Length: 281
Length: 286
Image (cartoon, rainbow over all chains, first blue to last red):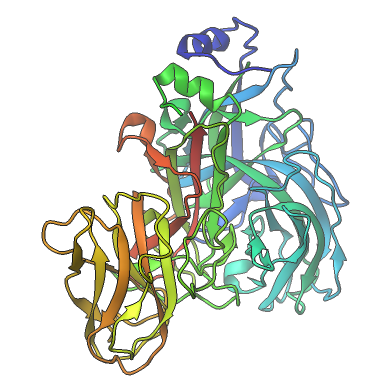
């Protein structure tokens, strides 16, 4: 395990020297889910690209508890570092058919098949295997199948915070027009316990709706760790986040499941593509 | 303690284990799942009470020196091993809020050095902030670049008046700030942040003795008086589009995050749309 010693060392590793094992993954998302155009998003909303078809291929709709890894469908499927080295993301680019921003995250745990109508605690018990101190981990809800007859209500998660406290997120709206689009991500605020905490998530425990949000919907609870943004300021214009901008390198942990999240600029859900550039050190 | 020497040194330290990529999310809601108070176009608002990740804070009460454990702050880790911590990148985008709006504006990152809350909008005598200089500042103690802000945490009255503060400048002189509007529309609402201009020639604040509301605003409400040190500003100009300030490129030069720094956010809105923000601070030790 080691650091990238210098710019010269980086150049050497990026060209295969010093056991750099460079890896460049060109990813592509088609703007289509389950064989059809992705639903029209709201401008400024946050969407999971987990189920969106492309290269590497899309995931199956989440079901029972899964701790996704680098071999999971839906992720970027990068190789793990070898020889005791660490893997570093040195650049991340994004070209979109509209304006918007991509966020790369490590997807740590997921539980799908959550009912949109049950008002009981729905167990989402998990034990994450990366970023296990919980700091900086987010918990969110993904709408996999939009419920019928949507009704405005709220939901919350029970979770274990970074101090091993049993916490409950604040209530977050769901079912209303702003909160009912397939692939949309809803993130409730974390809560402090006795004046401390609120900075991360170790494990999730329960998902609970205050009242029915509609019929036959399907939600997934996810714990994830954000890694890097790449913006696309205009349609058809590529932008690159790179190590010279101060946001990278960031470590890609062994077995990391690299997932893409989209922040939309308008109500357009378009294809996009980009590149992940990584080296080992 | 050392600096980042060059690009190679930066790379070595960013991959050397003492780095923090801290992502934050401000929801545009208070913890009660009610929408935050709408900002006022062109005026500054505090995001301390916004729910999110890290979680929201609570209104200050007695005089205190906030640190990196303050609820509502970024809760970053302290540098270790005698090193210094440097902000290498500050980035943020604006996303949709509960009312279908997406706010744009200027995001300011500041270190909250001292605060005293539970101050009244109806008391017209001097309200004590530091008593005989206590508690004393523990960061930026030479005062240079420090500012005095007031943060309204419970709406004060509808009658406009002015507010001033008695402070010690960077040269240990006792001065009073210039009077600014306090109370009345746009200067009374919860989360409003108002900066107080220093006396002519002053460049900073070492201590804050008291604040004085010239005449009653009509409602006590509650507000907090603070000494702060602004660190970085970021223009979040478009919906869902990342704004990034890359200190490695010298725009501006890298900013040190002092040990125990209480990193908080303020927002100067372009409109009355409540902001919901997702961003990150990237920091490295050297």
